[in-house]
Length: 206
Ligand code: SIN
Ligand code: FE2
Image (cartoon, rainbow, N blue to C red; front, side, top):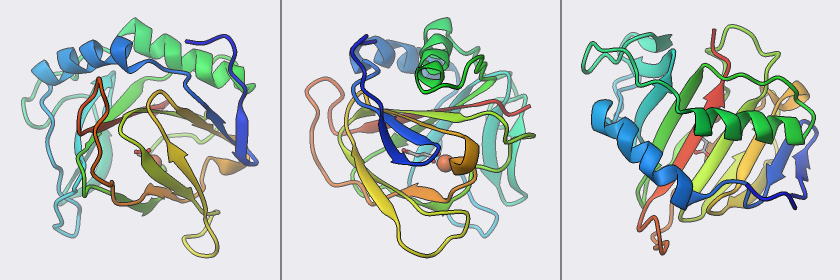
């Protein structure tokens, strides 16, 4: 983590912390997690297969299937508890939140998204958490993706920002329920991460 971070406000309540995280530091943690909770492409309630491959660490993990979206204490693929959230990951999220004024952020869930070229995430709100009083911290690693944010409704003009390796977004307050998503990932290669983008999304779910 750099001490020379200059947060950039994307929209009120949403900040970009450029190069706040380090892929060299985080990739071994991700590898460890996916060795016990493998990546998988989840189904949506409507029967579509998501282009992003996902897994989780923490007390609860976000899952989707034909019954809908929810947080679960166990991995539906293995029946086991999700791997614990590594302290280094949790501290990174707490530090990022604090940098823009959200003190005491203690995430209990971390969704790990793996994007390969062509993968995307449609506009959505993060609204399966019990309360919206806490922010969300979203860490990007690897190849660059174009992130977009709308308002409380899924229409109107969007703002876009390119998320590069190590970039962190924190959104809370009035941005907590804003629709957001990721445009289709363009093929590219990152020297450490390869042809992949990782996104770690930390939440207080319970
Ligand atoms: C998400 O909204 O869950 C993921 C956003 C991202 O991949 O940057
Ligand atoms: Fe999201």
